[in-house]
Length: 150
Length: 110
Image (cartoon, rainbow over all chains, first blue to last red; front, side, top):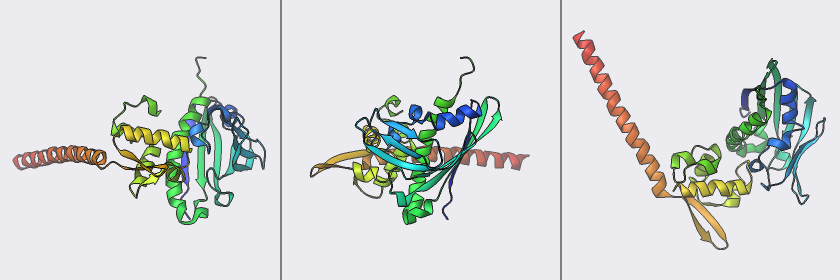
C-alpha cells in the first residue's frame, strides 16, 4: 500500500457553509490551473448525490469528467473517485470529513488514497498531487471564509 | 500567484511546489510542455506559465526541436542556486564551529 495524502485544516465558517462551498459552490473557487483544459471561462460541476459526477465543461461544451461521488453525507462527509488527467482505471479516492470545531469554525480532514492502482507511477503521482493540494486549498479557504465584520 | 513574484528570483520561483516538481522532472531529462503536463495534476496552460516563471528565474532554458519546444534545466542558474546555498551553509558551519569552540573554552575555564 502507498501511504495516502492526509491533510487537515480549519476554515472560519459554519459547517453547512464549508460543505456547500466545496460542493455546490465548487465553480466559484476551483482554479483553472487545476483542470484538464485550463481554459478560462470553464465551469466546474460537482453533482451533489451518490453517483454524481465531478467534471469541467468548457465554454464550447467540451466535458472532462474527473470523478464520481461515492459517499454523499451532507454536511459532514463527502468522498469521490478521482482521475483528473488520468484514465478511469487509474482513479484514486478523495475522502473529506467536515466537523464543527465551533459555531463559526469548521475542521476539514482530507484523505487522498488508492495510489497503488497506478502501479509504479503511484508514488511519484502522489508526491506531485501533494503540490496540487497545496496550491488548490488556499482557493477553497478564501472562498469559504466568512469575514465576521461583514 | 506567479505574477506577483519579482521576476528573476530563483528562490521565489522554487517557492511553488508545482514548479519544484517541474524542476525535479527536468532533472531527469529534457521534455516538452506536453510531456511535463502529463506528469502533473495541473493543466497544460498552467505548466506553460510555470515554465515561463522558471525561465525568467534562469532555472530553465527553452529550445526548438522540430515544431516543438523542449525545456531543460539551465546549468548556470541551477549552479547559482547551489553555490548560494553552499555559501550560506559554509558561513553557518563556520559560525557554529566558532560557537562550539567558544563554549567548550568557557567550560574549560568554568
